[in-house]
Amino acid sequence: MTNDGDHAVLRAVRRIPVLLRIAAVGPVAAVAGLLLWAVWGDPGQRLRLLAGCLGLAAAALLVLLGHRLAVGRVDPADAARAVLDGPGGGARSSALPAAVPSGRRLRLWTGAATLALSGWGFGFFFLAWGDPVPPGKLAEIHRAGGVVADVPITGVADTDLNEGQGRGNRSRWMDSWTQTLEVELTDEAGRAERVDIRTRSSHLRQAGDTIKVVYAPSDTGLGAYIGDDSRVFTRSFHVNFEGYQADLPRLADGRTLSGYELLIWAVPWALLCALMAGSWFGLGNSRPVTGPSDTVRALRGTFTRGRVTGDGGSIAFHPHGPALGNVSPALDGRAAWVLWDVAKAREYPKSRRADAVAVLVLDDGWAVHGEVRFAPAEDPAAAGVPAGEARARPEEARRVRPWAPWTLWPLTVSFGALACYAVVLVCSGLLFTDVLSGFPRFLAALVGACCLYAAARRHFPHRREPWPP
Image 1: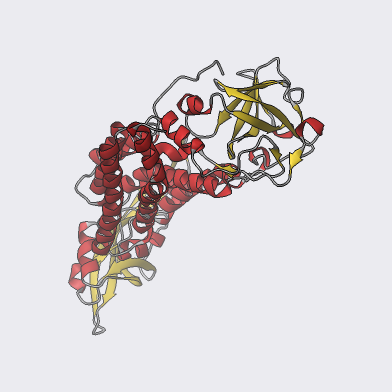
Image 2: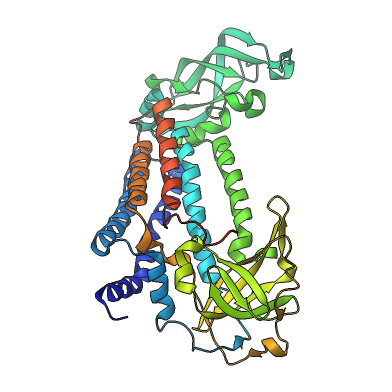
């Protein structure tokens, strides 16, 4: 590298570790913000903490924007070339290494960031669904030191039966009753005061029963809060997600999401974690190739336009991360070994091809994990030679270092993606408050989720694959 442009790219590449750590502030702040939204009680404190998370994410975005303005957009192939030609890899050698680093730390980093951003996008709808501030009457009771208590019912003013319907048929087990009840509240001095409440319940209540309400012993004149609908979820299905009897402590504390809403959020989140666990920790067919074994085959050749071509045939290799067209020019012409595990080949009947986990080991001392792809007429077990035999004898002393092309994204991210992230922060800030309500609130959530997805898709230029997949 001799010209100023090459030196500028090399300096930018050296800043990648710092930029990645700064960029990680955004996902960390997103996770912290979602947890605060779900569990923190005091609305005022919660808003201040959420504003702090938002400020951290905004600061990280400004740093990335400032670097982007100062350096300009770096072509991913130039950045990849600067990495591969740099001194960071292992010793140069044409031997097959006996062991290849799995890149576990890089996979964990990728998985954690992906999960955080996915959770943020999914969480937008729970930001829209939650209650930033308690209902008006409850807010007054909360400020006066409201408590949740079982109070006696001293009288029933009126009762209306709501007949249950299930798929158009009468369903008695879904019956509910809307009642005006007189309850007795006890103040701090032990004096009793009677107030009226009105609620829809799954149970027909009578004088002498008890019912859970929120009231302020310091000011019983504020009355009692029970919510409009205290039916259990099994009696109301999707109609009633909050305000039921077991939800009153949450409302009294000022938290935003009921137990039912948290459950609806937690189940998809857990499924998402389970689906990603395979790629994070290398489970099953996603376990990376870490060296020669009984089921691993190897091919020695030269990387050219997405394929490693040698005496044992030609294999299409796709690195994990950006589209191959973004990094292929930097890999072209480099001598390498490609190793793939035949036992982990996956067939795709619709596209009539097979893939297998693989690793590209460059003579430059770098190992790039990815996958090899086979056309319908190709047999994964027929190409190359068994790793470990005479033509692919591993050398114990050789050491290589893992490299993940996706780590280049702070240098290649577009202004459009940065603008989308800015819109995401604005939408998040609006949803942290009660500025929006009803349909505009859900519209802001939809815009935020779509912009987050669009931004994540624009970390690298969109380029066609250099050859038919």
